[in-house]
Structures are given as structure tokens and as C-alpha cells.
Amino acid sequence: MSRASVRRVPARRALPAAGALLGALALAGCSGSAAPAKAELSVSSSYMPRPVAADMAAGFLTITNRGGTADRLTSVRSDAAGDVTMHSTTGGMMREQTSFAIPAHGRLVFRSGGNHLMFEGLKHRPAEGQDVKLTLTFARSAPLTVEMPVKSATYNPATGH
Amino acid sequence: MRKKTFTAAVLLAAATLTLSACGGGDDTKTSAVTTLDGGSSSHGAATVLDQPFAKPDLNLTDTHGKAYDLRAETKGHPTLVYFGYTHCPDVCPTTMSNIAVAAKSLPKAEQDDLRVVFVTTDPGRDTPSELGKWLGGIDPRFIGLTGDFRAIQAGARSIGISVDPTTKDKKGNLVSVHGTQVMAFSPKDDKGYVLLGDNATVDDYTKDLPKLVKGVNP
View 1 (cartoon, each protein chain N blue to C red):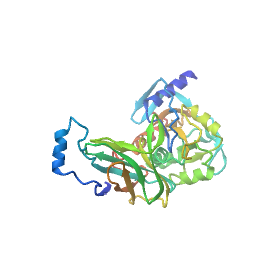
View 2: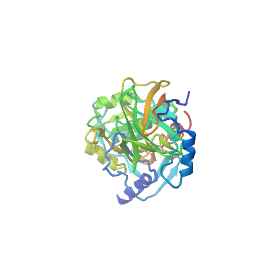
View 3: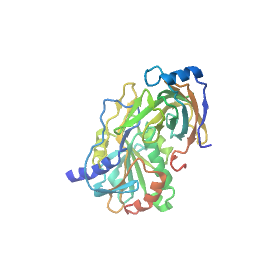
View 4: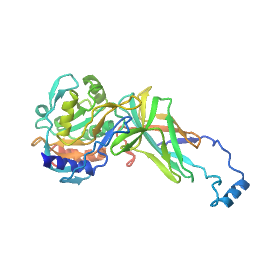
């Protein structure tokens, strides 16, 4: 129960026909018309440290892209919160971002002290053991829903307690 | 004075995660981290300073609305001082919660002796009652202080911790930027020899607190 369960939403675009794919491969290298490999996104290591109060909470997760095309996380929303925003830390400053890049064959990591999701206006103060349901929206891929487990206020993902 | 600043800076430079604002930030802002050189040594999550800091001379208001003189009230007690604010989603509640959990593993007498002081960097919103409510959700024994921002900023600066006034970002969110270190003051001479960064875990505090409450460096 320590991992977030992720439900994949069917991809918007159908796979290209095999013949078209072969043709695209044949052309690759001499034209930009090759059908791009899709981003293949999955979510892991999601958790919310139990917040001190309902008005503010942080959330963390990792988005892994096993595909050959980059994507972007463009929004996060949750019925449990009035507003969910995405923040980065650069040069010691936390800044709200409108989107985050997910590199091809790479990861986008939200972890304590770095990038984080900020939940404001939670309807209730979440209790340890509960799940907070989120929907992640991407520039290219179909949305993903995440059941983010609420952990203790001192939860450390490195040690698992 | 110069030497002091240098000493403090080492850890600021060493710990790259020293400063954070827990809110929507303004992109035009520059980092509040000051780069300095100085003497210190690292022991796990703790950084031991060659030149200790005097306890900040802070006269503020506690969560009961009463005047609180930090030096007088905490004299002779092992004291942890942290500057942060309650509208902070990530580092502030984690740091205070880590200390709260670790402190519970100290013997009762040492728990009673320890003073954990949270000084707000956002006094506009963190009134005594707001602070009291927030700290009550973490550990009711923790001391919360609020008051004049400039006094708070000067107190933080006196121990090498940078604090900016609360500002409004483009979306109208109020943001506070503050250093995220905890400074531990010895009960022996009331001086601050040890800084703990925001990466310090419950296990780090559990390991270091028994020494810190005795005035021994980790």
C-alpha cells in the first residue's frame, strides 16, 4: 500500500498502422516526417506528508517516461483541494511553474526540498492512511489519475518511514 | 564581525538547499543565499561551526500574546531556533515535525529542558494565535514567536540566516523567503555551535539531540 496506484487513461491517438510505421522508419534520417515515438508515462513514489492544517499541504511524486518523446506536465488538480500548484526550487527560491518538462527516457521528480506540489484549501485535513486523488494533465499524453497516499508528517521516502 | 559572517557562510554555501520560500515565488527574485567562505566541519546532517554564534537578541511576542525575551527565557537551556512561516507547505512543517518526533525519544527531564523556538518570517499573517494553532498541531511545547519583521530579520541575520520580507507574487500569493537551517544553542554557554540543514531527518535529529541537549557537538 506504499505505492500509488495509477490508472492509465486510454491514449487519445491510435497507433499508426504498421505499414505507415515502416514507411516512417524508412524515411527517418532524411526527413522530419517520421512518426514520433510516444511518451510513455507512469507515476510512482507519490505521497503527501500529513499536513499540520487543512489550508496547506505538499505532495511529491515521480513521473517516469519510458517513451522516446518528451512531454510536459501542464496541470494538477484534485477534488480534495481548492487549488493545486506546481513549484520548483532553483537557487534556493521556490517558484510557481505553469508546466514541467518530462524528458524522453527520463523522469520528472517532485521531492521534499526540491520540486513540490502545493495543495491549498483542502476540504479536510487529510489523515495518515487516506488517499488524495489527483489528475495530472500533460501536453501530449492522456491524463493520469493518481491515488496519493497520506503519510506521517515526518515520512522519509529514502527509509520508507 | 567579518570573521563571524565568513564562518556562517560556509554552511550556507555547503548546504545548497539552505533557503526556500514555500509558496509561489516571483521569478525576478534572486537567491537569498549569500556565498561565503569560512571554517566549519560536517558531521552527518549537522554542521559544526568553528566560531559559534551568540543567541539572537530577540524580544518578541509568544503564542500566548506575552512578551518573550529569547536570551532571558532560554538561558541555560539547550535551544533550537528556526525561522519559518506557517503558510509553508514543504520544509517548515517537515523540519518542525522531525524535531518533535525526535525529541520524544529523549528522557523526560531532557524533553522538559529543551527549548524549540519557531520564529515567524511572516508576522503579518502569523499572529500569536495562528502560530499557536499551527505549532499545537506539531508539538504544543514548541515556542512560537512573532513581532516586528525588522527585528526578526536582524535576529536571523545575526546568526547568518537570511530572511526576506513577505512579498506578493504575480498571482497574488504571499511568499516568504527564509533560510531553512535550525541552529542549536548549547546549554553550557548559550552559544550556537551547530547548524542542521533542511535535509536533516528524524533519524538525524534522534542521533544528534541527545548530544545537543548536553551541549556536546555531534
